[in-house]
Amino acid sequence: MIFMEKEKTTNVIQRITALRSKRGYTYENMADELRITPSAYRKIETGETKLTLERLFKIAEILKENISNLLGAANENVFNQTNSDNSVNHQYQQKFENFYQENKEIYEKLLKSKDEQIELLKSLLGKNG
Image: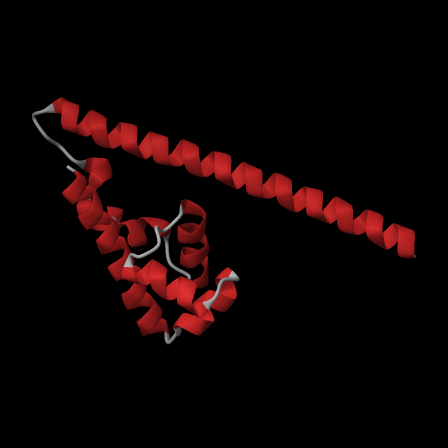
């Protein structure tokens, strides 16, 4: 099971690498957009550093690619899978719901953080104005 998960992660990273090359981006371009060093970005693509969900979303944004394409969900037809063993469908549905919930929570935290930064900047500008 661990091997399968590692293989899926490797496939996501391979899709990212291929798209980055196709779009003409270098490690430096990606690192700059992600606000990390080129060495740190290279470690993501080589699997030395784990790809976080936040970075995956940012990479999808930078590459102008749908997150489901990076995850390979479009190829697996996960959402419309028919199988006589209903537990398999339930497992995929549960994984998707968990993924959605985690992403929703991260998105909400990011929005809250953005709003807090805006308020801080407004207060700083008000003091200097």
